[in-house]
Length: 143
Length: 105
Image 1 (cartoon, rainbow over the protein chains, first blue to last red):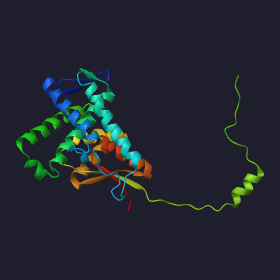
Image 2 (image 1 turned 30 degrees about the vertical axis):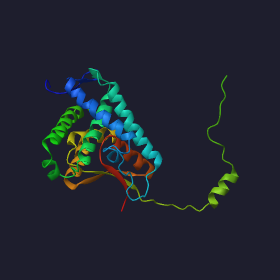
Image 3 (image 1 turned 90 degrees about the vertical axis):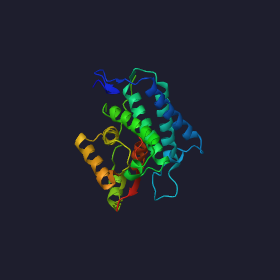
Image 4 (image 1 turned 90 degrees about the horizontal axis):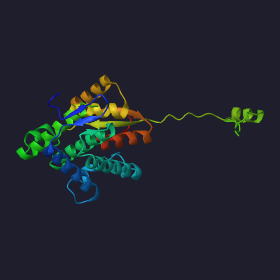
């Protein structure tokens, strides 16, 4: 437990044991998610807008809008709680969602859609993916 | 001061006559499936946590669904009315999982 980056306390809060470097990585990921939501030219933009119903030409615009609002809202919650030592359950869930969205967007943007592509990824990219996976592994254990 | 408002209107003989004259047609619609797709980067523990949070399934069921996604490339995690299926799909996408809806075969 001593090495865990996130720990669920008895009072329900989630303790964050990240140093400034780790929080900086998360800050950068949130900045990307928020930018990609607003900027159609951002490399993550399309990966944040997967089809809901692929058999239909267009998805229900209200569903798509709800998704975009919730993704952005989660990222904003993470930014606002980034300096906290303890997170509420809702904040910790927003962290998990945003980090997972960032992980998937990173992979999709670099064409990592199979295990073989992942194994062939550059060391820098692999390092980013492994870092996010480490955060997510410890955070998901709190739920 | 409080008023007692009847929540159910009284049934009259006319109502009963009307009801007996109506032909009942049952339309069975095919359900919509919420599908979660495999990807090479998402940790298995995240998938289980997301299923638990969104659907409230047991740990065993979530683990079984996660393993189905992992081994078969996809799993149907919920079936039912289209609007609810799309709503669940959006929740899964917000949590970063690759999901979509499809009409049941």
